[in-house]
Length: 472
Image (tube, rainbow, N blue to C red; front, side, top):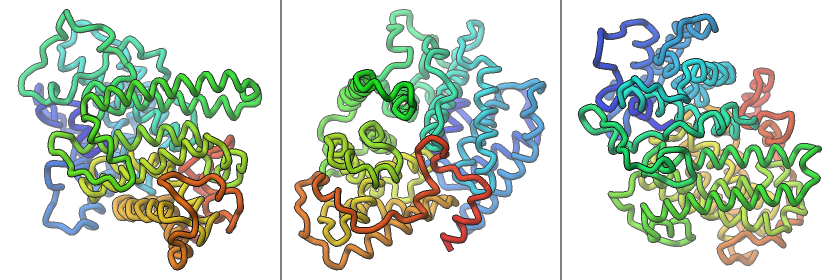
């Protein structure tokens, strides 16, 4: 989740609840200060601005470790859990993926998060609560829903939260309403019930408005990929084609509603060579949402797994490859604008990383396979992707970001000397150039797989020494 989003989950006035006596328990204090260190609001300077960045990061990690120490006893099943416990669990799962010290226990926190939001029945309405309290419950549930889908993709798993259990839960109010001073008024009686429940339409240009419908689609893509890899279901190609067609239709609903809010000119940032002056009225999160939208097509039309992408010559010669490649081009173009408006990737680097990597696999593979035959388009997109990866390396403490940055830099260094104009390119990948391997797949890529039996970007403790040795 982006910096400051935790604050917007809880209260429109302050991160700290102002009604009742202040909560001075160590977990609450560590949570508040740790979040301030790790996730300063995008429009405010980080805590301890006089300190060097490394010192501030070390301070945040120390406080995060203290939070783990104090909070862990509250994860026991017989604990009398409250809303703040669910909020803390959500924060743990938000920070842990970018911290090596706790990444190995991430699955524990994800399981606990699902357990506690369901134990507290956050997916059900409680009639006698105030509208503010209802919104807090809704926002935390739906934020957990987004994290659930995101981690399913990141770690090659299936979603733990089903659509069925929350289809009747209203979606949150737009941030513009949530951030207004004073208590929220109840929903108007005239408001359509269809507009309140989860759909595929973009309701507002904020985190939940953009990413809730995309996360629903992401869950469908992950399930589609599971069926494609299952020996019972992958024999019915007509069945799988119908699922894929339905997902494309849902993405079209998202796209049309998004364009209605940002305008068609904004969407041209996905085109190669298009220059667009960022509009102040379009929030930064819209750029990230548009990138994720195009990445959904890469996931839908591609194998997800980088080794399959490299070895599957039938896919490389198919229309599916061209469709995935077209949207990978769009992702690179949008990433170029993201670096302009958010050069340090401060807004949501923990969330953005998985989708960015998936969208960059195709060009890494093309650069490795084609070698010096790589055309200007491939090298341009690889260069953009490397610039973004370098910012990820600067912002996070994760092995996989450093690994992919090193591999992409290596591929570029081998190709830049004598590549311009050596292969035709008209703005799209050229399928006929992909079938002839020019180099072998780097063995470091084999640690991160999206096939049955592997766990995506998560690697076990027994593999960390191997990765650390090869990253040195």
